[in-house]
Length: 389
Image 1 (cartoon, helix red, strand yellow):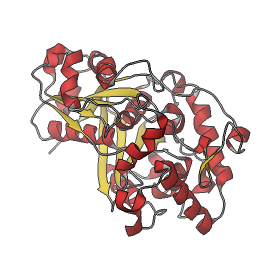
Image 2 (cartoon, rainbow, N blue to C red; image 1 turned 60 degrees about the vertical axis):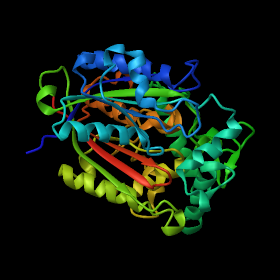
Image 3 (tube, rainbow, N blue to C red; image 1 turned 180 degrees about the horizontal axis):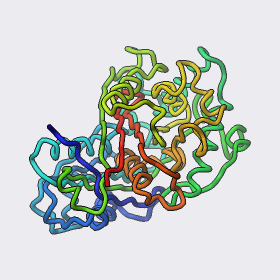
Image 4 (cartoon, rainbow, N blue to C red; image 1 turned 120 degrees about the vertical axis):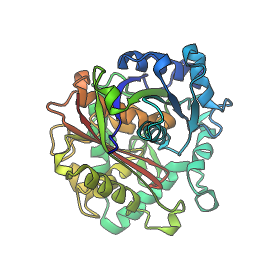
């Protein structure tokens, strides 16, 4: 019987506007530290996956070939580049897990990275729209415009809930205060997030600046190993379940606020793990915009359709709530360097389960969930993690 692979080590750079000059340097900042954290020598690595979205953010492609420049002892190790929109990091992780669980090797290194601040901000929306269906969704405001339309549609159907969106933003910023890797470590407060102002203007539809994740640089890395190898190392966080569900790329082919792909991914993951949502200690979910987190409450089964806003209103997703969500600040406050995001989410949950989360640590964290999506709920990944050592 196949045994699920384990996360055995990790590393994480600060997220934000970085002085690190390029993707190569970001990769180098986490690759070797992750191996050191795992207690693994570069010579023992059988495979490397690198998740970088790029699509014009930086001129250097062929990112899989950059890892050995920072660690020459990885010179002859097979390495590939993986891209799957904002879920690029988790796609890279799944590729590495597939390699290990197929029996082709024992240890793999996963790196997610993105340098987003090298270009003028005005050029970013068009590049990021590569993660949408350009024939129909070439919104001049980029993904903020797409999710602004999603928020508008939700409000038309279920009522105006911008107050609850502000509560989600305030929650995530308050949580990020304790995250040393976060882009913004400042508690903005509900009143600021709920008030349109010069510092918090409307961006698209009903979404204010505080409802939108930021343009960030950063990198994160994971070391994964087969169960037998993991048993010989210091720590082992098993992926008890992992699922990947795709949906139509055009929003016109589906209900844009139903998030059917995320819903199915969650259902499959919980079923495979043999648990219910109530068994999870915490969840890191993909809050590229606050409205995404609100609808994801419904997709994961925490609330019925049209009632996701109740989860934050009733305090269920607060740090001391029934199901703490984004206790690290989420994409909203931790930052969203596209290729690094999925890897970062898994690092954050693994840290919690290993008891290595420092000031972010949740008491008695036993099972953690990760949801990472690409595009507007197009490619959807859910992971259920548990500590086995």
